[in-house]
Image (spheres, rainbow, N blue to C red):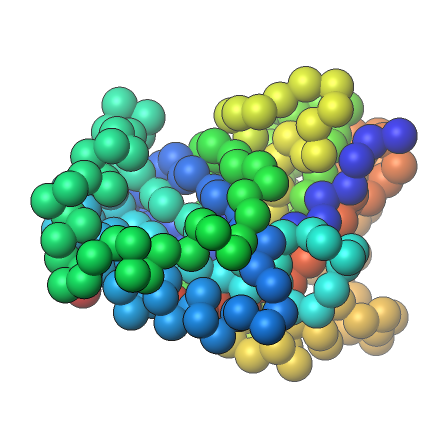
Length: 254
């Protein structure tokens, strides 16, 4: 039985228009130290990310908080570091001694590694997206039988529908994207690809998720009639869909 994705991501979900690959680092943060963690990361460590972005070493940086609890002990925060390409990735240059000076304090004074845990990290590749600004990301994790078939259908069939809804303001959706896993992979992988739906308000995300037979318009019905996801996905659906809230974001030219 495939492992389900029980943590906070994505992405994702703030890929810069110049960020084609992303490094995701997941964190388990104790409830009684969340405020301390967020303050240190957004007040100090984000300055290091900004210095690297200003130097062209990174395309973007963001921190996301998982909404609710999916499993006890599961990661509840995720860092998303985006880059133009894998050739542009050099984490040593991003977190260099010179960039650490931008914090204005000793790194030891604001470290967060001692009270948090990093259970895993992921390298991702952007496959397609409909750009937009958003505060909440509904991330849908999948392990399709055919990765190429999943990506192709999402690009050719589902993207036009989401793009139409985003432009019209229907369903409250502000963005959509598709990413594939580059590393790690294998038989025990949690997922191999994901999509995300961006929203400004949590209520819009919840209304999007809830069962509403009256909300299935003709465009949606047409896509469903053409979809082959029942064959592409082992059990006909996503492994997991989890909502994340944006904590902080830094991109180029900010």
